[in-house]
Every structure is written in structure tokens, then in C-alpha cells.
Amino acid sequence: MSTKPRVSIVMGSDSDLDIMRESAKALEEFGIEYEIDVTSAHRSPERTAEFARKAAGRGVRVIIAGAGGAAHLAGVIAAHTSLPVIGVPIPSTSLQGMDSLLATVQMPAGIPVATVAIGKPGATNAGILAAQILALSSDPLAKKLAGHKEKLANSVEEKSRKLKITVGAS
Image 1 (cartoon, one colour):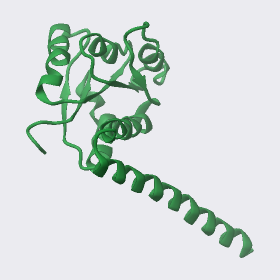
Image 2 (tube, one colour):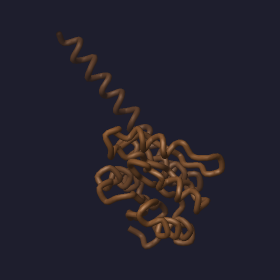
Image 3 (cartoon, helix red, strand yellow):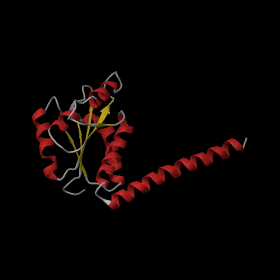
Image 4 (cartoon, one colour):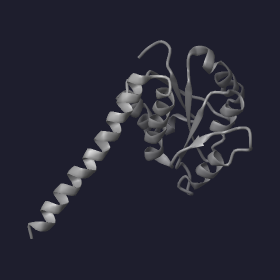
């Protein structure tokens, strides 16, 4: 990885790492430099604010923030930066992430946070969305994303073909 990551993946607790690794995997698929860190909107508010304020100066272009429970991390980061922030709700409580989803998606006007699905699928989509944002100024990355979409479509065609063969074989 480069010394200047273009995407920063942060989470409120290291217990969220298993889910947030999915964002990293998606970024790796597209060859995008990233960093991973832990910071908490509640337990380390000054550290979180400083991280957000300094991210752009370090070359970060998109922030992916995963948090469970009260899930204020993405919103607090968005309040301290003009970089795009993508929130990943973590299913960390008995509410299975619904509390995290609502806390992440329900930002006041002027503090946007793009919010994806709860858990691993959301973390994967956060990585892909970060790639799409970066691809706005990178033709090579845009081509990789087009190839990714083509791969997804081919996968569906292959599954459809297999299903038709299986059903027709009875």
C-alpha cells in the first residue's frame, strides 16, 4: 500500500474489523490505496475530529466509517470534513443493526453521509461506492469498474444457464 491512502476506513471499535475488512477487499479489487483505523465518536471525540480535519491534507479522498449502536461516527466525521463520507451500519446490538442504520442515515441537512446496507454487504458496497467516487477523475479506475459490472452480469448469465440445465434435466 502507498504511504498516501486515497480511502480511509475507520470504525468505532476493533470488534467491527471483520465487517469493515469487506470494504478493504473491495478497494483491493480495484487497486485503491487505503488505511484502516479505529476512532470513536464517543470515547475519543477529539481524536475523531482531528482525524476528519486532517484527512484531506493527507491525500484521503473518501472516508468509509463503520459504527454500531448509536452509530454517530460517520456523522461526526462528516461534520468536520468536506470529503465524501460513507457510513456502514454495524449490527452490534440486539436490534441487529437497525439502530445503527437509522442513526447513520438520519443526518441533519448540511451534513451528508451516504449510507449503505447493514453489515458485510454494506461494507462491500461502501468500498465499491468509494471506487466509483474516485473513478470520476480516473479513467483507468472507471474501466476497472466497468469490468466489475460486466463480471457481475456474466455471473448472473452463468447461474441462469446452469439453472435451466438443471431444471430441464429432470
